[in-house]
Length: 392
Image 1 (tube, rainbow, N blue to C red):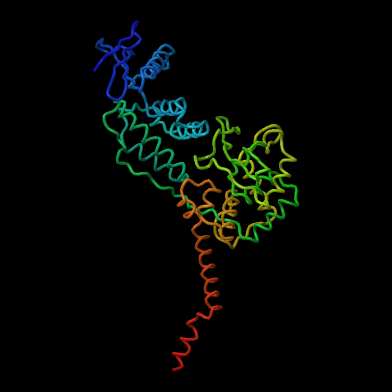
Image 2 (cartoon, rainbow, N blue to C red):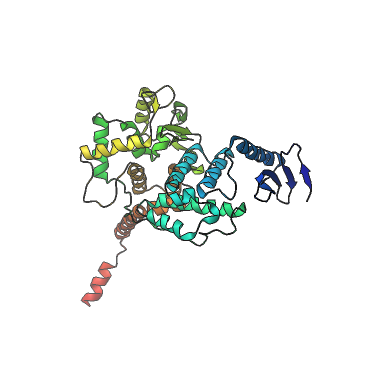
């Protein structure tokens, strides 16, 4: 293995089979021997940048020795590295920091060095989180597992104490978000088009195009093409570090970047929005971008104030129900699953089929009933035959 040395105690860079490894002295142990920190990278430049970062952390006093680093310390480094290396968007970076804050609330995980961690206290912490949603539990569990896996990879610890630990399930009762019935949709449509309701344009657009609210709030005038009758979806609204609305430079998923048609039903609404909208963004309030949470709060107030929801129909109604409502009406109208997949921006046809399986099943039953009537009109019927056989 060839060695490339750097002068002035700045560290040493080695060539390895998979790239490069660098070492730098970070201190002296109790026996007077140097303590070295190793970093890896695909290029010499990447390794040198990491060595410089370690050196700067020593100078500023923010460096943590491997035998003192905690799970939260290492998780913070991983989160920042993911963002600096452009592996995650800004919105994901802030969500990861929020997840870390949940872990930091536990004194054991925040203060105990990685080498001293054991499985049971970590398991107890995860069990204490089961009252939260499954989504939160998943994020916390994955961050802990990834951090400890990275600790083994960096040779901070020899074994992962939670390698075989199973992810707990939420004790919350999950209620499936449903679409609005046709009667509920018509009541809501009437309210949104006749009453003075904040964010009515956004709600109508979601209910009639299936766009996610984050995608709607991020729309600009340049995304609308009335000549081709299309809407380009290429970004989404997200939350910044302080909870403020920020624009992500791409849609929620890779397949979320799409172009959808403007129907004849929707075009007058789009023209009205363009007439009322800002010079750049279509939806803005007091010179500030609008978050999904703001629209969601107004939606909940509206459906309660105007008694929109039929309490006898099972299922949860939320702002996301508007997207479900659009998809359900499309299925009822006979739209093919593959077409609906593109309009909704799903990455896999199975997501579309699984999410709206009830609607597809009802649609199939309705079409079978139509086929039965068609056969009967042709004269194909076994009822007469059965009646004749019974009589004989």
